[in-house]
Length: 499
Image 1 (cartoon, rainbow, N blue to C red):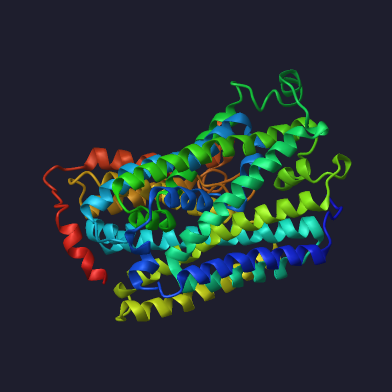
Image 2 (cartoon, rainbow, N blue to C red; image 1 turned 60 degrees about the vertical axis):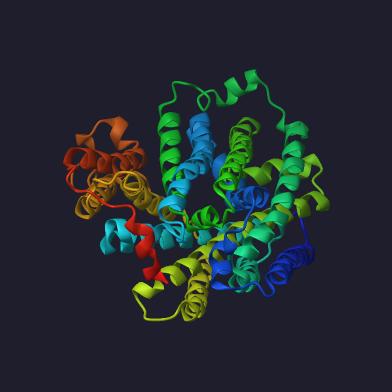
C-alpha cells in the first residue's frame, strides 16, 4: 500500500488532539490524589464497571489490529482460536489466582513480592527481570506499531509519532499512577468499542470483502481445514505463549489488588473475558478474509488493506476514525505498561537500594524515562520486535507452572522451584528457533536437522514452548518431597519488608 489516505496536517492534528485529551483527563483526575497507595493500587477502591473497562482497554493494545489477522494468514483458524483464548482465558485464571493472592497476601501489590517470600531471591530476581523485559518489549511493539500505522496512512515520520505518543503518555501516567491509568481507561474503553464496532461493520459491508463458505473453501481451504497440522501447532503455541505471559503482567496484578472486593474482581475479570474473546475472533478472521480477497500481500497491514482501500470509497472521516482507534488502543496499553514498570521499581527497589518509597518513586521516574528513550530509539527505526516478544514469552512459559502451582502447593522447596524453572528454560532454549525459524541451538547447530523428523524440525517454535512449559511440571511432580512444607501464613507478615 503506497497510497497515503490522510494529509500530514490532518494526521498531526488528530495525534495531538487525541493524546492531549487523554493527558488532560489523566492530569485532572489525578490532582491531589497521588499517594503511594493510590499510585500503586488506586487505594484498592475500584468497582466492577471500572475494572471491566480498565482490563479491556489495557488488554486491547494496537496489536489487536495486526497480530491476530497476521497469524491467521499462516496458522489458519487454529491460530485465531489459540490467539483469542490465550488472551482471554487469563482473565478467568486471574479470578482464581487473584483471589488466592488477596487472601494470603492482602497487603501486597505485586507478584514479585510473593515470589521473593515463597521461592527466594534467585527466583525473585528472575521473575522481576522477565516481567520488566516482557513489558519493555510490549512497549516497543506498541510504539512501533502506532508509528508504522501513521506512516502507512499519511507518510508521517516514525520518530515524530513515537516521540509524541511517549511524551504525552509519560506525562500523566508518571504523575497520576494507577488511578490516572484506570480513569483514562474508562474513556478509552468507550472510544475503542465504539470505533471497533463501526469499523468492523464497515469492513464486512465493503463489497470487495464479500465472502461465502464456498469461497472460503476455494481460496483458503487449508487455513480452515481440520487436517492442517500447522494450524494446531500455531494455535497451541499462541495459547501457551500468550496465556503464560499475561500471568506475569504487573499491570493486571495491579488491577487484581485495586479491586474493591473479591466480588468486584470476579465480575470485572469475567466481563473482560466475554468482551475480549469475540473481538479477537473477528479480528483474527480478517486474516482469512484477506487471503480470500487478495489483501494479504503484507500480513502486517491486513486490517488497513481491508478498510483503507481507494477502490472502496475510503474517505478522510473513516481514515481519521481508524487513526483515533489506533491511538486509543496504544495509549490505553502504554499507560498501563508505564505505570506497571514504575510500580515494580517502587515495590522492589528496596531490595537493591536503601531508599524510602517516595524517593524510590522519584527514582522510578528516571528509570522509566531511560527505558522510554530506548523504546523511542527502537520504534523510530521501525524494527520488528516479534523475535524479542517470542523470547520473553518463552521465559514466562518456563516459570509459569512453578510459580502458580507453588501459590497453592506448600511442598515445593525453593531449590526445587528454581531447578524446575531452569530446566524448563534450558529445554525450551535448546529448540527455540533463530530469526529464520529454521534452526535452533540443538537442531541445525549441535545436531544436523536431518536427525529429526519433519514434524519436529518444521515446528521448532511450538516444541520450544511445549518443552519450556511442561518440563517444569515433570520435574516438580517427579522430585517433589512432601516433607518440605511452606507456611503460607508468613507471606503477609513478611511482605511489609518491601515497605
